[in-house]
Every structure is written in C-alpha cells, then in structure tokens.
Image (cartoon, one colour):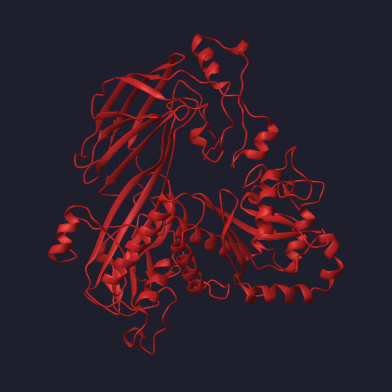
Length: 625
C-alpha cells in the first residue's frame, strides 16, 4: 500500500450526536476491499479480529458514536485504563492517544461486532469531525489485539505497542490535517497569518503610508484582488452565519463550502492541497496563459498561479508569551515563547528568496519547523541563511519555541483571601516593562479576575492606574488602553479592593453513573480535605464553598474551581522577546529584482497567569538544568 495519505470516509456530527455531513470515497474504498482480499488470513480471522470489509451507514456510525460516549464517559474517552474500562474498548489500551484516534464498533446483519479504526477525532466548536484514513487490514487486527490483552500501557520492549504502530502510518498525520481544515471551514475560522505593516512608508504609495501609520494589517490577496476580497468577506459571512445559528445542523451554504473544498482539495480521497486560500482563488480566478511558468522552471504545488503586480516582501515575527507567575519561594515562575515568522512575498514569476535569520542561537530555540517551500541547512550558528520559494498570500514560513531572553514583561503578585463566605479581599502589585527599553513598547495591558462559579454583585477599590469594569462572572482591570502605550519606562500598578458575590448555591454532585452517561468531554477529579486539618477560619470557608463543586473539566484547567488566578492580556510592539530578528537589507532575491522589504514584530500574551499567592495552584515538576 502506498505511503501517501488516502481517506476512506469522513463524518461531521453535532453535539446532539446527529450526522449532518458525510462523504465516502469509492476509489479509496475499492483499494481497502482489494487489500482485504489480498490478505489471505483476513477471511479466516474475520471472526476473531472483526475486520469490516465495507463501511457502515451513517445511522450505524451515529449509534456507534453514542455507544462509545456512554462506554468511555465522553466523546474523547478516558484515555487510560480505569475501573469503568471494558475489554475491547479504547481505554483498555491504556494510551492517551486513544482520546484523539478512536475506534467504533458496529454490528452486521449476523449481529457480529465489527471494528472501524483508526478514526481521527477532531472537536471544533459544537462539531465532532471523524476522519477514517486508509491503512492495512493487518494494522486494524494489531489494534484489536491490543484492545484485548490483559496488561496495559506501552511496556518497553513489548511486541505490540500503539505508538510505534501509529508512527508507521503517515496517513494518520494527513487525516489530522484534513480534520482540522474541515473544522476551520464549518466554524468560519479560516484565517491567514497576520502581517503587520509598520508606520514606515518603505513599501511605497500613499495608501501604504496611511494604513501603516494606523496599524492596519495586510491580508493576502490573490491575483484578482477585487474578486478575492469578495471571497474573503463571503467566507467570513458564512462563518458568522454558522456561529449565530442554532448549533443543530449545517446550513446549506456551509455544506456547499465543504463539498467544494473536498472536490478540489481531495477529489478522489487523496489530499492534494489543503490550503483553503489556494483552493478558493483557483476556483474563482481559474488559470490563463499568463499563469504558465517558463519551460525551464517547475511550478511548486504551493503556488498554483503566478502573481502579477507591484512587487514587495513583508515579514512579521509574531511571538506569544505563556507564563505562570507564582510569587512563591518553593515554586519557580515559568515562561515560554512560541513564535512564528509570517511572510507575504508579492513577487512575479518563481523566484527564490534568501535571508539570514538573526538570533537563532541566542534565542535558545527548543523546537523548529518550516514551511515545505523552505530549504534549511544544518543550523547552529548565530546567523542561519534560509532560502525559500514563496507561495502567494500570507503564510507561516517558520514556527519555533524558545526561552524568553528577557525578564517577564509583567511581574508581581496577586492575592485573594475570603474574609467571609460571600466576600473576598484582593491585592495586585505589578510592574510592567521593567528592564525593557525603546523601541519596545506596550500597546495595551488588561488583567482579568474570572469567577466562573460565583456571580459578582459588586466590588470596592481604586487602582493606582487604569480603569475597572465588572461583569457577572469577572472583574476586568484595564491598566493600559490602546493608543496610550508606554515605551522606554517601567510602570508600577497596584490595585487593592474587595469583591462581593451572590450567596452560594450548593449543588449536589451527580452519581458516577450519571456522570459517565451525561458529561460532555469531562472527567471527574474531586479534591476533598478533612475539616480536621483546617487551621483557620479562611480554610473553613474555602472548604465549605468547594465541597459541593461539580466535576471539573480537565480540558479547561484554568476553570478548575479549587484554584484562583488572574489572567493578563497584553501586546508589545517594536521587537521580539526571544531575540529573533530579520535584517531587511540582507534579503536577497534570485533572479535579482527590485522589491522593497519590510520587517515588523509583535508580541502578544497567551496563557499569562498570575496564581493566587494565598491559594492553591497547580504546578508541574521540571528537571533541573
């Protein structure tokens, strides 16, 4: 069987477990049946290993999905073997990957169980996308044996293990890409990487000067800009309609978008190009004689048509800072940076672009990945040359993870103490941009205190800087607002106050049977403490409020009711925190052409968490360097 990815079928289900869209690929299914016939032992072992020679109907898939949710406790499942696990189920394999690559059991006319595997499960919004890639029948039989063995986990040196099996199946990766793209289409999240145009009019033209000075981001445009613009707005409208409508089924417009994408991106079940922008542009603009490249040049798959117009190159380094600030001697603060180099190369023909990437060594990069268009030599020097043949539109040239080369942009502490059952006293003491110098500037900064299980009645307190607003389940402190950024100086911000909640309404915990049958992708992790260990009134109050909490959703760790935290949101312009940079004067184009090059950076917050110094907090042990 070829090593490329082929898809047998895909299904889209709503949160009511109703199939609203399905697609089967007869060409790939014919290959599956041929593989079953070639496997001489397939028919002999069919009763033992339950190999299904054909696909179930949509109703059978929906029923099997509902049965699995009841058996596994949720759509994703337990992922590990627990007391409720049943032999032959996914959790019996005792591997967390079974929360994302699942199996379904159906029955044929003879009431015999048939196993469908591997089904890639992608949950996006209110939809579950199931993608079934083509594998060998032997792979399916190997998995069914894992579901029935007495031992659990991936033992070292074991004859059969799930991880090595999946590593030998490249179709799994392709199926994940298909599932993610379908999910983005049905939820309207098909967006392009952001390219920031700086205030400098280096690109040329009055329009570029105006848009750059007010911070407008450039969006990718196909050759025919007016048509492409209408396409982008249409896609956005489709997404908005899908989000505003009741989440019962897909609108006809959404189904048409999916059918159109599938017919172009994977017409016979084999993914060719999953770039939604390319597919839409080719469909609208078509091809002409002007799109034929020179005879001595090979046109890459990521550039299906040629650009014509004013030439320029735009680079943006976009970094996201994730941090956990504890302000405790026994727990070190943690901060990491995930970044990407976004590019937009409006160049005629099929040129190559080369530039040195500055700061690759000093940034202490942990992980690197590149766009297929890039040619990357072995790295390790301070400056690494990167060559690529750019596609059209905005694209991510490189992704990386690195340590923060500077101190945290926001440092300090957050304290919350319950003075009574329905009232808490809090204190923030923060320093912004300490040690940061121009041209780095903070565009805005906001701190949010969420209380997902308590309704806020009022708050009392005045911050030293900024404004405060209150919603039903949160208090928001806007320290710096857009348009009033700070640069070249640090700012100290304090905010003492009290917050009053509505009276606590105790809720009974459902029984284990009800939890397993009704919870939507939730697991139970109740945390209890004996009142004999309570040392003061505050602990007694916290114990009283937390004892009736419902089962926690491990998919959303920051909504865990036993923890108190504040979340910081900010944007920093003028440079990267990792030290990564690009010198526009060092960018070379082959064959040589005069095209202005512009470079910009922006840093935004990801999960930037201030844990309550006086409360409980999650922490992971890390090995010492």
